[in-house]
Image 1: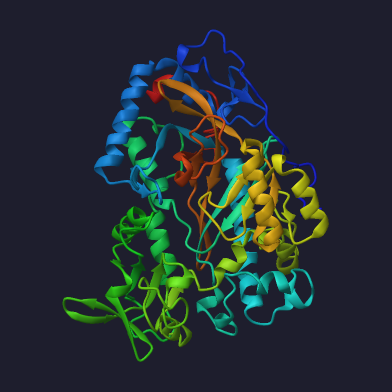
Image 2: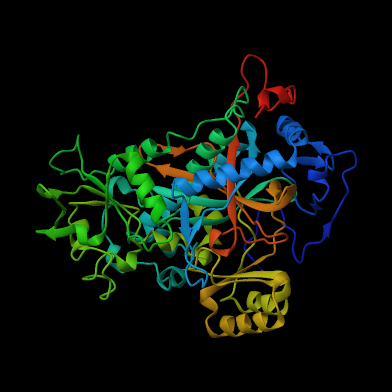
Length: 526
């Protein structure tokens, strides 16, 4: 049987049904809004908005479709002028695209965010302890809590990291965890992104553009700011300076990018500029006597911390892939000698392997002696004969994922697949069961989006960003990703998804709650 979520929080399994419920006495812009068998972020029932959405709802009722359309065009122009783009690999129509954004923010009340923050703090703490353990004493493996074979067979497990001490024992400094809201309104973790998590620049860009398009929209609504994320990230990186660095109070920190061809290159340039650090590629760095230097017009300059956006395989052609030209030859020796720090550490990918993910509740219990605050989604491990047989019999109801892929690649969504696609995945699973897991098809929550002049519902998830330094820091919000295609469950931008701004409301002040419906639409004048 699959690894189970907490009792009472079972996601919907199988194909989802959709009912179009007409909203009477509402403007034409809402007439095609669909209510599904999933949690609706805005509405408790058709026409009845949740308390924390009422002011936004009134604004949407008041604004004519032409004005919303003009606002969306203004937002798109802002993204275009600022070069807010992403890359789609292998697309015949071209690779560089403006990042799709939606004007209607997703709103999370303060009490829900407090639970998310506690759960993600617990999770990243346990995962760091797990990574330190498997690369040192291996107690959790010796005790049989996590199968040793599962860890050792993971392609992201780096034997070169055995016994190597990382600064302050922190393997994962930057994490982006994907959350979904289930039909009962609770949140669950869909997957962890611990290697080189991306998307935070789009979170910041969404907020900046929305403020520009709707300049008074934030007035008196009590939304937590997120603009401080780059400085929080910089502080986290500064905390990783090697103990023997020559100048600890003024370290040299760089962001290592694969280059302009990478899908997240806009993010690399944006974050480097916001933090005031150098953006470099592998050719800009060299290693001498196990020390990393950056080439500058004034000569070589020692580097203390590298925020790397290059995967392990390509970091060092002397240690990993011999054909890589993206990394820095000799970097791993400098890292092993303690002369440079990397964020995130090499080998963290073993903890976001989708098969290891199934054991995270047990990992939390083992290291922290606590139950997981945020449950996992039930997951079938296809190396187990009974679970594999069950999945193969119900492929039309399952989501099948390759354990090491991201971005929506290597995935089968059973209810939306063809017989030929299911047969192809059947063969893949039988040929290499370790490489796949399966999960029930989830009824992801829906949120209002502005689509072609109408306000329609679309499926969403949430990727908060967690920083692990002297303390765990979560910027209130995250990247709400949107499946822009009607009926789609895939939110990845590479698969036709987009994003929207995420508002986390402040704690109540002066006896009044910002979650309260006692606000007028005048406060939301555009």
